[in-house]
Image 1 (cartoon, rainbow, N blue to C red):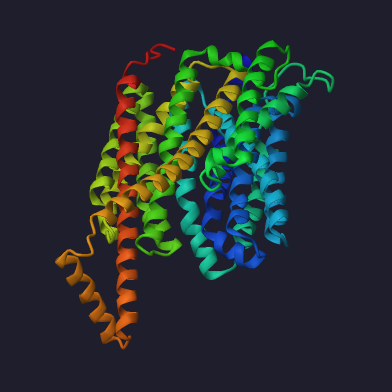
Image 2 (spheres, rainbow, N blue to C red; image 1 turned 180 degrees about the horizontal axis):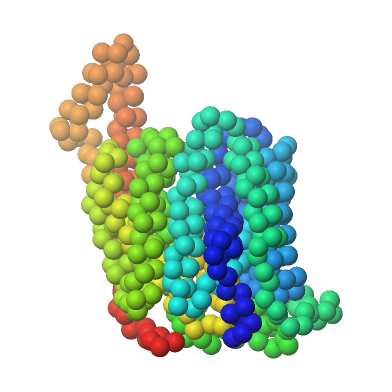
Length: 517
C-alpha cells in the first residue's frame, strides 16, 4: 500500500497531472471521430475510393485495440512516465505525418501507428489520474477523467466540420501537434512512475502472446469495421479473419494462463467487481458509440444538414454530461451505491432511445432533439463514472493499470460491435421497409394516380415535357419511399438500443456492492 500511496499527489502538481492526462485522453478520442467528416475531402484529394478511404478510420481503430490490453505490461517494462511520454510523441509525430501524406495507403499506415500511440494515452491517463488521488477521492478522479472520454466523441464532428469548412483536411491532424508537445513536456516534468519490481528480459518477453493478441484483436476489429461493406461471410477475407480471431482468442487465453510472465494478466479478472465492470463497459461502449454514430448520420443523410450543424447538435448533451460528472463524483464519495446510479443511467438511456423512436420523421427539426439529447447526457454521466469506479474499486497498485486496460478495451470493442451491428441492422431493415412500402403502392389506386399526376403537373409547370415530367414524378416518389424506409430503420435502431439497456437494469441491480472496501 505504501508504494501505491506514494503516487498520490497534492496541490498544483495534482492539478497539472490531471489536466495533462485529460488533454491526452481528449486528443486520442477526438481523433477517433474528427476524421469521419473529412473522408469526402480525403477521397477527392488523394484519389481514393470509398472503401479505401474507410481504412483511414479502420486502421486507427485496429492500432488502438491491439495496444490497449498491452499498456499495463509496457508501462512496467519502460516505466510509466517514459512510456506515456513516448506514446504522446509517437501520436504527435504521426499526426504530422498523416497531414503530410501523399497517398491513401501512406495515410492509412500513419493512422495505424497513430492509433498504437493513442491506445496507450487513454488507459494510461486513466491509471495516472486514479493513482494521483487518495482512494476516498477516486469517484471524483473518475468524474474528471470521464469528462474527456464522454466529450471527446461529441467534440470530433463539429471541430472537424469547422476545420473542413474553413481550412483543408490536413489541419485536423496538425491541431494535435502543439497540444502533443505541451503534454509531452508536462508528462516528463510531473508524472511519476511506480516501482514495479523486475522487468522482463528480452528472452522472457511473451512474444507469442503479443502475436496472438495482435492477430485476434486486429482480425476481430477488421471484421467488425468491414463486415457490412463486404457482405459479411460471403467475402473470403471476412471468413478467414473470423477464423483467425476465434482461434487467436482461444490460444491467447491458453498462453496467458500458462506463461510465467504473460503480456496481459488475465488473473486480475478473478476480481468480481472488475468482471462486472468490463461487461458493463462493453454495453456502455455499445450505446455510447452506437448513438454517437447514428444521430449525425441521420441528420446529414436524411435531413441534409452539414457536418458542422450535425456536430453542434450534440454539444448541449456533452455539456450536460460534463455538468453531471462532478455531481455523480460527489454522490459516490457520499456512499451512494454504484449499481443504483448505473441502473438509473440505463433507465435514462432507455427513455432517450424511446424518445428518439417517437420523434424521428423525414423532416424532424433541430429543437425536437434538444431535450432528448439532454436526457442522453444525464444518462451517460450516470453510467461512466459509477462503472469505472465499480471496476477499479477493489484493485490495488499494479492491478489498477491492468483493470483499466480491460475496461478500456471492452469499451472500445463495445463501440466497434455497436457501430457494426447498427450499420448491418439498418441495411437489412432498410431493404425490408422499402419492399413493404413498395407493396402498399398500387399503381391502379386512384389516390396514387392522383398523387403522381399532381407531381407531374408541378414538374410541367417548371417547363418539363409531359413524358419527362412523368419520369421525374416517379423518381420523386421513389426518393420519398427510400427516405421513409431509412427513417423507419433509424426508428428501429433507437427502439432496440433502448430495449437492450432496459433489459440490463435488473441485472445491474443484482450486482453486489462493495461497502466498506
